[in-house]
Image (cartoon, helix red, strand yellow):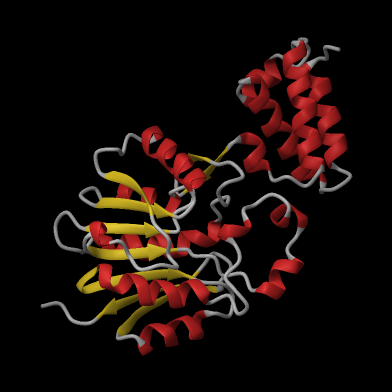
Length: 290
């Protein structure tokens, strides 16, 4: 059954108002209609009294159903904006969040002052959001996106191509829980947003996260620190003398992560907060540069 664009929008907004406030419901309805129709907001307004084809109507109904089932908008759209870059996402990767801008900004700030043509690794890369943002801002950086998930690397490679960064950015399969492969060589900096949700917190996650985002990228062990211990132990050898390790961490984990770094020969240089004024990232230096 075909419907007018105005009808598709109003029906979607009405459905979303059962789970969201009016402003959010309107935003969701508008974004979805633009996505499924391929039209801009202005075109939707101008064409509001026109009938959408059956394919668009069916796509809109499916998108509304997915949102009502608590699937996040990014997965429905198949992309999300992070640090000014539109990135492909699917259920094999976490949705890039504003929280992660803290560790990204910290890494970019340091990356701009590294030696010429620095080598930087984004470990547990997922969609590649951190590493690609670094490559986009640090114009001479050679960035390696590393993840244990082959499916995640497929998305990361698509994002490299989308932003035309293949000359300076590459992908490699690597497990943060195992020793760093020798073929990787040495890096000036390793940045990572590893899994850090505790076992208890995993049980309390909202359905929008628990039912749709990859647990492989969320669960950090009983205390949420398994990956920090492993990365420090396994990947310090992949740093050049005086190299840097830059971590995102969960709320309240800052002191524990910094203690682990200091216990293994790192000097903590900077701890920074996210947009919600919560401590979220740390930069540390390993040993001394020769």
